[in-house]
Image 1 (cartoon, rainbow, N blue to C red):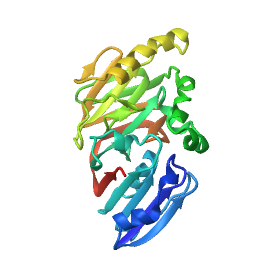
Image 2 (cartoon, rainbow, N blue to C red; image 1 turned 90 degrees about the vertical axis):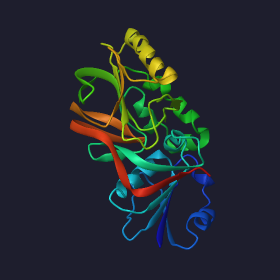
Image 3 (cartoon, one colour; image 1 turned 135 degrees about the vertical axis):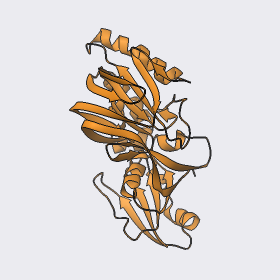
Amino acid sequence: MNCLLVVNTLSGNASKVREDELIKKYAPEDSVTVKYIRDPADTYSVENVNKLIVCGGDGTLNHALNLCRDKEMDIVYLPFGTFNETADGRRNKKEKQLAMLGRIQGTDFAYVAAAGSFTGIGQAPSVKSKRRYKIFAYFSKVLSSYKVHRIEATIASDKLNETGVYTLLMLSNARRCFGFRFNKLYRDNSDEIQLIAIKAPKKDNLFGRIKMFFPFFRVFFLGFSKEKIGKTIKFISLKNATLTLPNPTPFCVDGEYKDLSGELTIGKFPHKAHVRIVKE
């Protein structure tokens, strides 16, 4: 069996990767090639690959999942990132299966696709600061990310149809995001994804930011155990929906940047690969 071991040297805990030990443990009888990611633009081919071992963070896994979407193969993901939201946002087991992925306009994601307030934090810290300060490198960016966004959008589904202006639009496929274990509606490998939408205050000024604090506190610090369709907060489970964005909007997709606009189809779909998340 041909196995490719991918090590993202840019991830926060890449220094802890021990290639020989991982090969011995997860591919002892395979023909193994090692690929090192040394630049954000680096990619690789999975042609003639039967097994993929991925060492890195959430973005590293996201790239692998989209690269292997149509291949029936084994993927072993070992989280060596800083936050590791995909691994930590599921049931507290050493090994987990990842069968159902979120999808937004043809891009699969393991745990989140979000736009608006605080969502740019994932791309803000440098590689050097992540290696040195770990999760604190992200916390240092919170204040600079505390601002009102005004995202025009139309949400259309069997549960919600509305057009509005939002400071946060989030699709959640895990219990946890931004370090908060808030999504009480999430179920491992369910066919439903959670939509969180927070309406935007009228202005990005001191009053607007104070007003914005309360719905964010309600969502991320307290969470919801059942669906919520209120004036300011929407927190619902969906099998599929359409999100229409008239303007290009930067999204955080599993920690990676992606510009999206137009009529976007969203939902959850099974992945062809057999994906194992293993915490060493």
